[in-house]
Amino acid sequence: MNTNEILRAAAELTERGRSHALVTVVRALAPTSAYVGAQAIVEDGGALHGWIGGGCAKSVVIRAAQEAMASGAPKLVRISNDGEVADPGTEHHAMPCASNGTLELFIQPSLPARVLVLGDTPAAREARELAQRMGFRVTADAGESPQYALVATQGEGDQAALQTALDSTARHVLLIASRRKAEDLVAAMRRRGVSEERLARLQAPAGPHIGAQTPAEIALAAVAGLVALRRAAPRTDALQPRAVRPVPAFAAAGSYINPVCGIALDPAVAKHTVVYESTQYYFCCDGCKLEFEKEPARYAAIQAERLAAQAVA
Image (cartoon, rainbow, N blue to C red; front, side, top):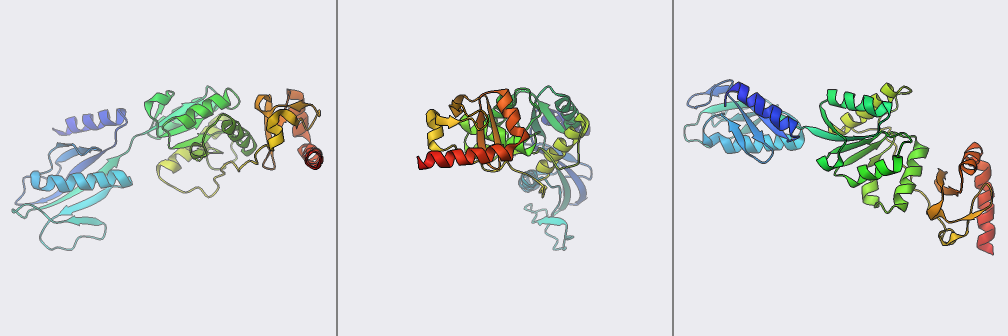
């Protein structure tokens, strides 16, 4: 394969979302059949396309390329038996060929990342464009085996979209939402039967706090969160939704009392759920939910007294 064919093959693998590594010979000392500038591609499964010397070095190069793909970091590899001490940044391997030539190769891994972006909001549209510019392959189809998912519905079908993301192959699910809303959605996912193992994939808010206000700024923070995950960079400000105290057993039986209007209702069919101070509160209508959110401390205290009285009774 010539250089153009190598580059076309790399582009095709990237388009298919396949990890691969580009290997380039940067030094070749006779006797060896390789030459400076020779290139090859190593696929994640170990197939090598191109020319970097004879079969003696092939197994070493494939193994080193697969290690580079696993770590995501490029490396400089020296294959030689001349006893010369390699630079600290160079990985040394013995030359298995009887010819005892020397090869130095630069291995650059490429790890295309597919991200599922859900939502038809301005922030979702901005996030799609920005994610593509950052080298992500963006899809709206959960069936394309995404590595990441970003839920940017912002009130438009939040629960369905979040469950789709959590049910996908995404290792990490980012949610554009406030902490309170995220906790509300986590509670809803639990009621839908989503496992704690899948909920552990969720990260909300979606990215670092940058004081974002506009859709473009919100998308910027979310995509920064994706980049941090791809580069395995820790987030010191990451906020995972807090654990929510379960509903008391008597509430599940249908005797839960709406903290605002005092009407009994079944939490399973409540119209709204709000999480306040790590406790779930259920409401029969929009008005009760809005009233609670105006004075949550007041109604939480009323509910605590009511629950205590029921427990004694």
